[in-house]
Image (cartoon, rainbow, N blue to C red; front, side, top):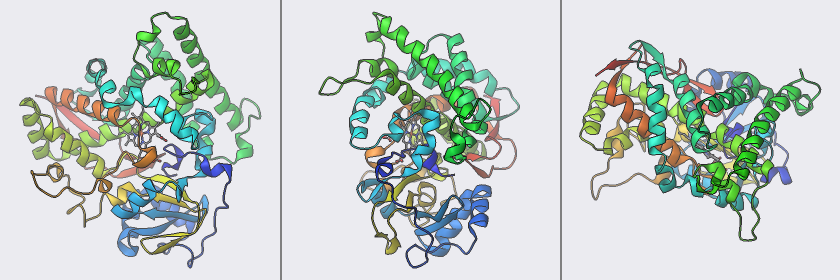
Length: 460
Ligand code: HEM
C-alpha cells in the first residue's frame, strides 16, 4: 500500500475517473524485471532497498509494479520531477485511491475533498495550524510529554514508536479536539483505537461490495459500527461546545471550526466537522509518532551527533535540533510519497506517462539521491546548516511534508512535537543503541522501524 491510503488523496479524479491503464512497455517508464507479485512482496519486505534498486538501475522515473494497479505506479524520484508532480495540479491531480479511506474518516475530510471545495475548506481549517497559533500549545504539549516520560525512561530497551503513538494521539485529542479531562481522553483513545488499528484498516482493501454493511460481522459492518461510535463521541463534544458560552475563548481546532465561516457566511455542518477531526487523527498521529521514533533511533546509533545535540540544547540553542529533525526525515521520510493521477498522456524526465496512471512524488527515494545528498545513507545533520552565502539545496530536494496546494497542514504541529520531545528526553537521558540499526517496514503510509525504533535511555 502507498501513501495513497491516507495522505492528500482528494477525489477530483473520482468525479470523472479515468480507466487505470494496463502495463505497456511503450507507454510506461521502465520497470525492474519482476512479476507484479514479486515486486509487491519485495516492496513490502524491503521498501527502501527496492525503491533504490529501481532508481539506480533505471533512473529517476520508473514504474513500480504492484498487485492492485494493472499498470503499476509511476515513481518520480528526483528533485525536478518531485516539484512537477507536487505543483502541476492540473496535470497531476489527486488520484482516486482516496475513496479507500472513506469508510474510516467519512466523506467530508479535507484529505478526500475535491477542488474547488478543497481550497475553501483548507482556508477555513488552516488558521489554528499556523505556526503562531500552534506555538501557544507549547506548555500543554510539554506537560503531556512530561507525564509520559517515565514509560520511556525505564533504563531498559524500549520500542519508541508505541510510546510515541500514545503521545501523539494525546496531543491531537488536546490540541485538535480540545479534550481536557484525562478520563475523557482515555475514552476517545479506546474508541479511536478500535477504528484506526491496523487490523481494522486492512478491511479497507477489501473489494467495495465487501465493504458494504452486510451485518455486524461483515467487514463493512465492523468499519461502520466503529466509525459511528467515534462519530457519537464527537457529536456529544460538539453539542457540549455549542451549549458552552465560553467556547468562543477556546483555541483548539474544534472550537475554531465551530466558529469558522466563508465569505458567504457558510460554516461547517456537524457531519463535516466530525469527518475533518477523524481525518486529522488519521493524518497526524502515526506520522508524527514515526518521525519521533526514527529520530531517537538515529540519535541512539550516532552518539557523536547525540552528544553534539545535547551540548547545543544545554547551551540554549535550537539550531542543531532543527538540523537533526530535517536529517531524520530526509533519511526516513515518515510519509514516503504523495500520490497523484496523470490527467492526460504526458512525460516526466523524458519518460512516457499515460493518462489515468497513478504517479508518486517519491520523497524517500528522492531524498536518498547521492547527487543531491552525498553519502545519503549517513546521518549527517550538518548538511542542513548552510553558511552565510553558501549554496542551499532546492526546497524540492527535501519535502517530508509534501508541497503545493496539499502540503501538510499539520507541519508546524509535528515540528513542535518533535522539538519538545527531543529537548525533554535529552535533558534527562541519553539514548543508547539497543541492538542493530533497524530495517524499514511499510505500514500504511509510513515507513516504520521494524522493531519500533528500540533504544535504551540512560539517565544523565
Ligand atoms: C511528521 C509528521 C507528518 C508528516 C511527515 C506528514 C506528511 C504529510 C504529507 C507528505 C502530506 C501531503 C500529501 C499529499 O500531497 O498528497 C500531508 C498532508 C496532510 N497532513 Fe500531514 N504529516 C505529518 C503530520 C501531520 C499532523 C500532525 C497533522 C494534523 C494533526 C497532519 C494533517 C495533514 C492533512 C489534513 C493533510 C492533507 C492536506 C490537504 O489535502 O490539503 N499531518 N502530510
